[in-house]
Length: 247
Image (tube, rainbow, N blue to C red; front, side):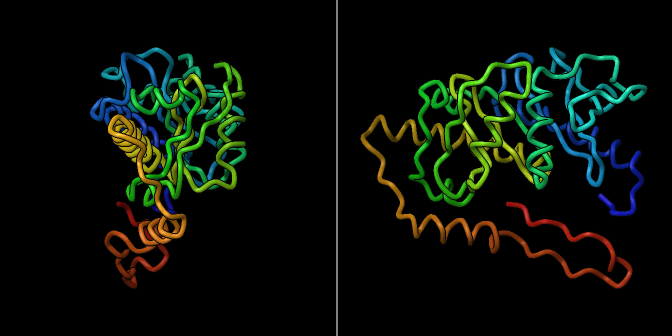
């Protein structure tokens, strides 16, 4: 997204991105019926975009995504503002207010991750893929009821100072964060994958934990070396923001 785009252009882009990313939750089997949600911060503004409550995934469009202020209030007069926003809006808003580097938040009820949340048990870091993506175990957050910012408070208190971009909210399900909405969806996909694999490994016996030093090295490599290097900017694009490396 160009750093020179107008606020309206940035809002439109995030609306389109967030609407489209909900299909990825369905594609990867992370949600059932209308459960779950994706939101995205509008870069350089005090707004974020989130889906409406209880609307079927196949009916989600850029036009019915809801633009909210960082206190979770829909912006009057904007497209979708007449709809009720996701029941997790206050939680997402709290995360955006208190974690300024977060640009996307995702909530699912994906089967294996939610099963760990129901047990109130962290997913131990016994896979290199976990070390790569999350830098350690997947922590458990406190139980909190839906409807206010209690879930958001639990997410922030659990993830602050933690390398993981995923938290298992006790008896509820997973939330993931990322530098943008797509990155948060990626974390949700990877979380379910490792939650499933670790669960299956435990059916065969206790998994072998990774050495903390290896976890640190794997996390550093994946976050800073893995993938294609960003292309050097041309003279005409000298002021354009660089593109983050993706997995």
